[in-house]
Image (cartoon, rainbow, N blue to C red; front, side, top):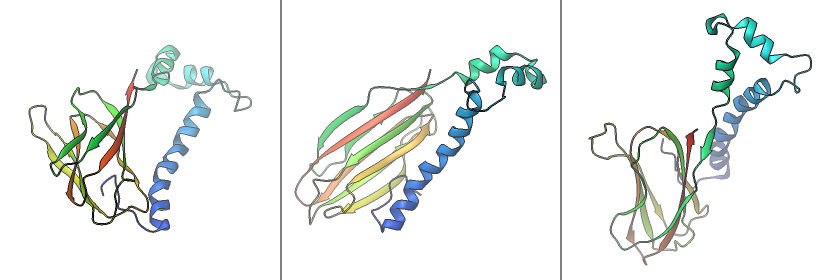
Length: 182
């Protein structure tokens, strides 16, 4: 299923949105365990790791180093792209780093008679070519105009394009945010 569903019923939108919300549950548990243990009365995380992690040789520093690895968001990339009937690149990432990427597209300018096709391409190999992973067609004014095009971990080049195939040429706003491990 593509990361950017067509606008649907409120139930469809809620179901889609809760996927991201549900993934935060594991983060909450991790944060509680890796905190200074003040959230868990009587817990001593440092002692627990040192004495109960024989596979690490009780190496608390090693565990803390891995636990302290955080994700850092780079400055968002924002653009306004004028559609003209050709396939326009909205987002392209070619400096390959393992990263999490989010991209958002604002379809507010669309009106009756407009059709815009959004495609998401990925590469599998360094020297490979882009291959379409997902394609979605949007027609007319959008009831839910903000579209999350991608929200995924990447390991290779990606490209997101849009092509207006009908209607008055529109200018679309796009934003991408990349988060890398530091």
